[in-house]
Image (tube, rainbow, N blue to C red):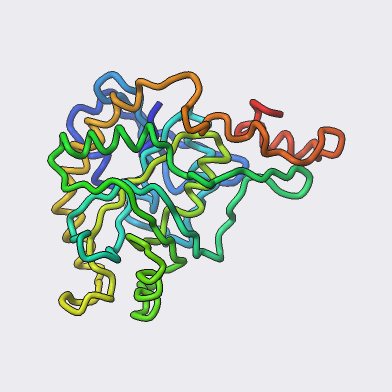
Amino acid sequence: MIGIVGGSGLYQMDGLVNPTWREVTTAWGSPSDAILVGELGGTPIAFLPRHGRGHRFSPTDINYRANIAALKSLGVTDVISLSAVGSLRENLAPGTFVIIDQFVDRTFERAKTFFGAGLVAHVSVADPVCRRVGDALEAAAKTAGATVVRGGAYVVMEGPQFSSRAESELYRSWGMSVVGMTNMPEAKLAREAELCYATVAMVTDYDCWHTGHADVTVDQVIAVLGQNAETARRLVREAAPRIAVRPAVCPRGCNRALDHAIITPPASRDPAMVARLHPIAGRVL
């Protein structure tokens, strides 16, 4: 099953068969919304509105753990994350789709792990994006007619305010490609849940560093997203069957990420934490 995390326009697409909204609860609370489950070209699909329908949750208030746990509980194996971002590079103009390969996490008010006291794990996120899913997204974006760039670093800020000019220039000096507010800790949690994860970052603006463009506004973001909505839907339709052809073991090791991650020995594990984590880490527990 392919999980898609993104905006409301994505689940309003032709070809979605037997769509059903499903309420899901997890040990970490409720996800942002019910999850729309159906089939797209014969591939099982689960759509999760990241901010909830009607955009009810700010980036800080999203329950990222519940979102990923809910997708995992439905049988999702691969996650496509679609995210609006600001460009930090001249060549990444509004309307560009960037297939991200790295993240820098600058968030500070979000729960970032399923593990904790009584059962500790250290999962590698050296390569946080699944190359196989990224390859499928790149091919799908080209087929869908998107202007697409493969590779780039996404710096995730806490928000909900947009960047100051000094912050924007700082991120540029670090070599970042885009800035946004939503893909961390989402990507880290997907790795802990052993899900293959990749991001399509949809550029809506030049943040505030570009002297030739006005500072970013909500109206500007919404306008560009609206212009790209059908392209994004075509991308998802093209990507789903490509991603569905998957090996038993991901070449990047995404679905074996916990093999050497748990450091608490069995005798020292809190039984309550073991039970809580079973939907996420039952394979190794």
